[in-house]
Image (tube, rainbow, N blue to C red):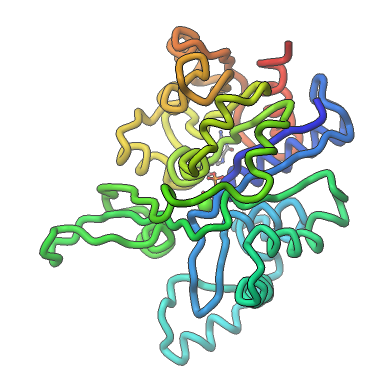
Length: 337
Ligand code: GDP
Ligand code: CA
């Protein structure tokens, strides 16, 4: 296998990619060439404008993680970050104060915003940013593609007794960062998704792949939004590559994040099998050929096999790149013909 395409969110996707790339370079993935190329199609529906700057959390988390610029404890933003800009903005009383931009991180958003305002599409801006973060280590072996160049934004409807309708709609980042996903989410609304078109290279990356992987990213607001870009599902259905996913739910709970809350909102059972069946088997109109669950969810394999999926139970905790590379190896092994 020479070309691997991964549909990624932020933290879960980035950690998985770290392990996948470790596995490729150390030659531990069965049947995968040591010079295999990885194309990452990243979610952009978390993006927001803040303080006049365009912020793309999932693109940046992938870029900083693979480029060794990520803060390893937080899992987002730059390492050795300082927060003078945030403090100064707060001193002026400028809202929002709940979305803190670190000083180092601000440089990325300044470059991105300037390029967008000069007329470059997000895909070209991302390519330019990746020349700093990815090219030195991976050459042209790793490409990072926004799912779309169009503005797509996830909004969450929450209960608000003070509003005449009884609900209020907030940007996904406000739900997650300010409200910490602690208020019931009544609906997930992805503004602009139906009218969006896939970013340059996205459909080709699916058509030309030898393997497509769905990392343990959030099935609703990461992978779910990528799959919602018109033509992406069709491209997955049509590709000759096997499509394998890894469960973000382990032992009935998300490991970190807010997948539990949002799966409930869209009516999907919060379990490894629930998410696998939600994606569905390609043989039955879904997007997957194979689905990996954690060892502690092995009792759910029967339901997945019955639905027409290749499925296996292996350790799915991304504790370090070696353990994560073993997950990637199991994903490859599941569909290797
Ligand atoms: P985000 O955009 O930063 O929220 O990141 P992603 O959407 O890429 O991934 C978030 C999801 O990763 C969470 O909802 C968790 O369910 C999942 N996750 C995080 N750590 C692990 C892990 O170690 N193992 C597994 N199986 N899933 C994980
Ligand atoms: Ca995200």
